Length: 300
Image (tube, helix red, strand yellow):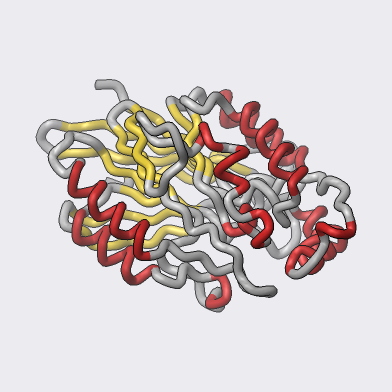
């Protein structure tokens, strides 16, 4: 069987910020809107994202995963803009999406992502959006989780919740005997970087315990806007949780530049799954329009 390639990008934080009515700028949105106008618009650039996406398409992956934070302060017009961008990434059949905390930035926008982007988050055979979702693509079981819940000002926490954990428990038990490579898509990392307490997944220990008990092959996330690999011990062997920087992050400054990863899956009758990845993006010394291969490694 030929290798199946999954591309993964995250946190595009799409600009430009659409005009906002005064009535829309209340609560936490005021802080985020001001922050975008002052600083973040220079970090998250649409031209950078366009170059990265063009390079991704040139690699001709079999499927694309996007792990959240398409919008910034969850204005109604942002969801429309993000829907148009999603259609440039690929069809709903070829792109699997999970939401991030910015996609649920304000309580007034809660659930809007499920309306605007439904077909990119709908599980196989489902007529509505439910989490966790299951999408079978090639040899993969793509399992989408949501951690997107509104949080207090200056907080960026996420939560799975008991109902979703119970649903994930049932889903993993149901597919336990299927010959599929289990890949979990989630916005928040399972283990936060040091100093990121205010941006953590609050019920991460319960999720980690469940994933280790059932066993999965890989977890893909975003949120921290940085390259990250953390290993866990599962009942089917160890598995990695891997994050990538924002797909629109400009070069320079104190943040990591935009990057994405291409993950190849190949089944070996004797050894099980062989999983390898290539990371492509803007190197620290690269010109603003130069995308290079940053890393290549075998994960399993």
